[in-house]
Image (cartoon, rainbow, N blue to C red):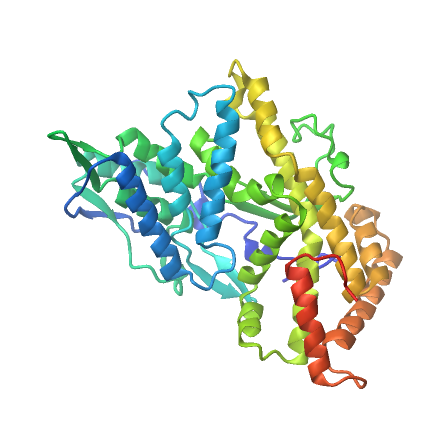
Length: 457
């Protein structure tokens, strides 16, 4: 992977460029990418719609526990957090207009429980590269085909096996949606001598759109637009959030297909950045580091790291922490773009009231960006090198063309000194025995992963 000059670049693994299943393709003539239908099994009878919802949630809770028991972030607790944040979002909207989310609570519940059910990946450069993808046209076509059979057919989904993602032409988000649809179409309510589907055709199509809203697109180190840039499309001045010039930009291109999609998309991406304060916000980011850096996670669990392993892990953790301020700043900008430009809001007679309510529900982007900056500078200074931390941060406030060769050389020299400090702290040295450096590494790891900025000596 290339180096940005300001730290590690994850662009190769985060897939800046569209993958084959992300392209805009017309699937109206045929099903593509191996999607087939098969005969559906017998329907499952329930006494109420809520019973169907509860059974679906239980199924996907068990699915996550069975498939991903070792995941630090994308697990059952994350799905619960997504639902909680989606409800916070929907409740804030309902304060102005109760009709927008009327009858949508069940869609939010099942979509939150299922949105990460399929997570295929491969290891690339020691990192977990996810097989992401969602094609709205195909998903809509496939689900309509199921519904047009009177639900006598279902989507044929291969047996889950994360180890061969190259065999799947369907991305994780799309397969997660298909697994949810498979459950939603099975349940029928039998009550008072009547039989009816637990979920309508319209609700099933909406559930597909809702999970599609969680599909993320990544651009590493993307420059922030200035306030006069038409791309900004909002009155938010980026300089009010951060003086950085760029950051990891995560977007959700399908999150505004419907209100439920925006609610679940909000829970999936904006929850920890906009509604969870300070330390807890960054703890979520550090859990993602652990899950993403698969080679380090395995070594940490075995507790048999070499001194060189500990030095490399410490540097990686601090680099990840350095990225968080820019990542949060981009999401604050995207949040304001949604409020300013979304077709969901533009023509609504109570748009201004809804905007105010949503901002009140997610008020912490700016504070969390500032906390991320403080956390990096504090922890890098304590365990790495203070001068490197401050100069690295200073250069990040300049555009690439504004950084001189002398400044680049200075940063390189400071990084060498910082790496020496990490080796002295956590690797082999002539002064302390190995057990002492191990103890210091565990102290460092606890402080950084829990984002504890006090008592660092």
